[in-house]
Length: 294
Image 1: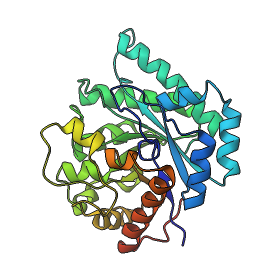
Image 2 (image 1 turned 90 degrees about the vertical axis):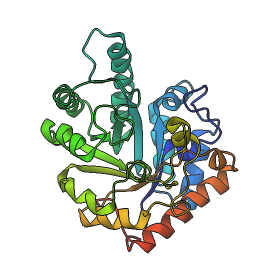
Image 3 (image 1 turned 45 degrees about the vertical axis):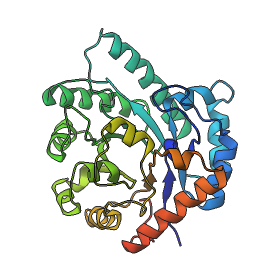
Image 4 (image 1 turned 90 degrees about the horizontal axis):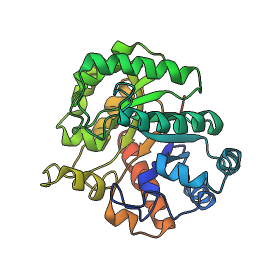
């Protein structure tokens, strides 16, 4: 059976300290790639802090060679914030430095896509975001072949709805711009699978699977970084989301982004194995077990 599962960075990084300390993984890149290949993953993800750390001891060519030599094909890079802040603002200066890191790596590593959004909750109008996204995509098109995917999230203070993110990405009109969806965010936003039909098929760029509980914890930031669940181990309708998205024509890889204290505490082999097994089970329930990357 062929299932295109991508182990996102936070799912496969092990005991990192999200937002509070060391965000780079203690797992070596060759070890991650070998384990991903062993359990049948199609690819892996890299967070910008981990990418910076790896580049201290590996050349881009070495990172790419290890990845390809293990038979992996789909590489995700993330995450870009504050790309819409006006030039001259210190936040934009920092964002531009991160942009250079990710765009250069996308070209050298052959990335499948780059994920971006508004994790920092910086306020901006939709017109400003649309213009900035178009400019960002134009810059990307001249530097690498990886699409840019804007992630829909409940704590995006500017674009916390399907309507808003469609307006930004669709309004930008960039062939290399798309929307990234995560079923954890969809579940927390109370977006039902049939509501995804409001997304134009040509704007759907990338999908991540992650489960959780319907009831909200008091601190959303703590919940999203520590208490997500593997697909099928929570209360969200993962098969329903998969069926809705394949019905829209999605044929890309299924990323698995589970930020969980329990998952991070597992030995690497068990962490990778359970990620693939639970995801395959949900894809099979949805009738998408033979899905592939276009």
